[in-house]
Length: 87
Image: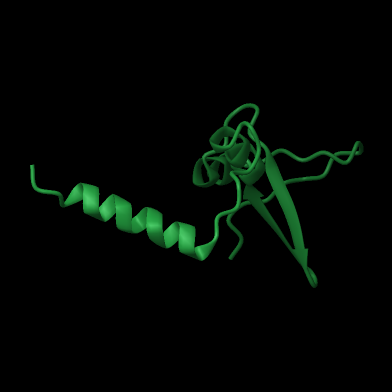
């Protein structure tokens, strides 16, 4: 059974029914994404931030330098020694 129905205008526009807006948490300015699989079309809310936005926020100067496995193992061991050192 269909959740809701919309009618396509002559300009190719539709209104998103209130029940669908509520379920997807859509408000003014929200972005939706359309995806097709075979003869089915899916609509979903797009997140506020892309993974690229998040990566740029975490690494504003670009990706961190590469480390070897040995360097990572030594850093972990150093952290554990410092964490469990007697004071």
